[in-house]
Image (cartoon, rainbow, N blue to C red):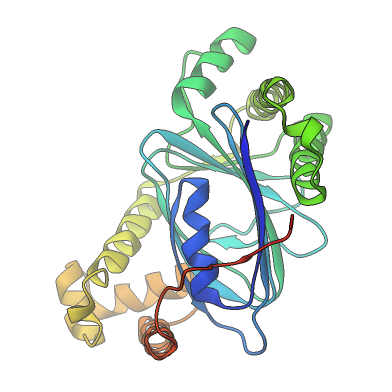
Length: 285
């Protein structure tokens, strides 16, 4: 049987601990004030991972896509779509991030988000079969404006899968049904991508995203948590001006402000006792 689950959270650390279930690596820094509430729903089909989330507070997340997958980002009404680095999604658009891509994604209030993780080989194989595309799977970060009906179909299929999990309909997530759903989703996705991207990474945006990936990498080692901005810029091999400029674009704030929030939340998590045995409430029970 395909694996699926819906979880509800009241603490950011627990939410982050559960998110890697969708195959990506994420870190989360809360930027809003108030009571944190989140919900995470996912289903693993034969090879696809279909994921949806809801969050009550604004935040910044750092995302790293696994080397064998493509991350597809959809929009969920009624809230504005998260901002992905320098990309503000317009109505009807979808985003793709290729294998190994990294990005910061931020929200400015309560949000809902929807993603699909597709194996590179499956996307390339279906693309060749449906449209004769020999260009392979999307790489890096790309924006797409799919044909209206194709985009709506992909959103409906994603919503139907998530709704089936949240309402606990076992007949929709049987192995036979899962295989059919997966095929429909990939075919709808290929139709959305067939017109080609409307924009892709430039050398400048790739460089800035690479800088921000290395910026996050510095703080995987907590000994660097107390570094000052000049030390960070020197370690990245860029000027302090370039660091401020890039962080403002990708984080919506300065490096100093981001790291201060991160330190406060790490200390709070340590006082709370770190990870705990139960990271969420299974809403199916």
